[in-house]
Each structure stands twice: as C-alpha cells, then as structure tokens.
Image (cartoon, rainbow, N blue to C red):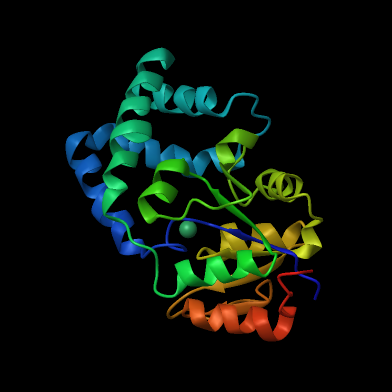
Length: 224
Ligand SMILES: [Mg+2]
C-alpha cells in the first residue's frame, strides 16, 4: 500500500466528540427552533442535487420550514452557526498522541490534509494543529460527506491520487464509506464499534494508528 498522504476528519476524530456536545448545547438553548431546523436540514441536504451555492440552498431549506425569508435565515445561520457556535470550540484539545504523530508524519514526508463538513480554521487553531498541506470544509465543494466531491477535492489539493491517500474519520457512513468509494484507503476511529468492510483499519488510539502506518504503509525516510 503506497500511502503518500493522509486526510483527517476533524470533529470526533482530532478531538473527543464529547466536546462537540458541550459546545452545541448552548446553541440549542439560545435558539432551539433554528438549531433544530439547521440540524434536520443538514441531514436532508445530503440527498439534494444539484447544488450551486451550498449556503444559499441550506438557508432556503431552513427558511421554507420556518416560514421566513431566505435572507433572514441565512443571516441567522451565519450568526448562530458560523460565528457563535464555531467560537465555542476554544475548549477542544487534540486526542492523546495525535500532535506528536502528525509532526512525525510530516517529518517523514507525508502530505497532510484536514477535511470537515463544518468550518475548519478556527478549530484547527484551537487545537494547535495548523501545519497542513490543505484544510477546508466540504461546503466549499457544494456537497457534504459522504458525497464524492469533498474527497475528490482533497485528492486534488494534496496533489495525490485517491489510492495514495489514507482517510481517517470517526463516522463509518460519512468518512469511511465516502472515502472508500473514491478509492482512498480508510482508517476508522472508534473506541467501541467494529469497522465494516470499507475500513482498512479500525483503531482505538493514535499510537495504534501510527504503528499501523509505520508497519503497513512503510516508514518514509525524511530525506526521500
Ligand atoms: Mg467526525
């Protein structure tokens, strides 16, 4: 397996998913109806095609359900989700063994990418993990995972074919199956669930994943 690059999901993959719930609760308390419709349509939008402007389509779906103008829904989502909610993630910390492992991968010559369905920059900054060849949200491609577009875009931005990328994520259906369908190798992070056939490895800690990469993917020499 000639892996030359890795792509990482962020939420629940780079930090404990518990933080996601802690950061989301105040959003639901502050604007429960808007947060509910956002969450509901975030699931529904995965089945929508074609989408030329993701945030406009998302706002149109939320506006229709709430009976408000699209421009108002978009402004409310911008404030509640893309500003207030994202800023709550100041408390997140990287999972054990991750930071040093990423430095080692970088030193060994692997390309690294971060890809999330939600905005990425603030979270990576809060995690202290900012050394990536690329980092972006699926929203930029118009489609959320597990659509192929975000994974194809990752392949383009890493300048590597999908089969030379190992994608790491904590959602079997969104990360593992999505990445596998475009030809990437996959690593499924789960403390308790068993991986399915689309996962090349299921791991429970980052030292376990980095050992796998060292043994199965071959340690690249930093001078190569
Ligand atoms: Mg995740």
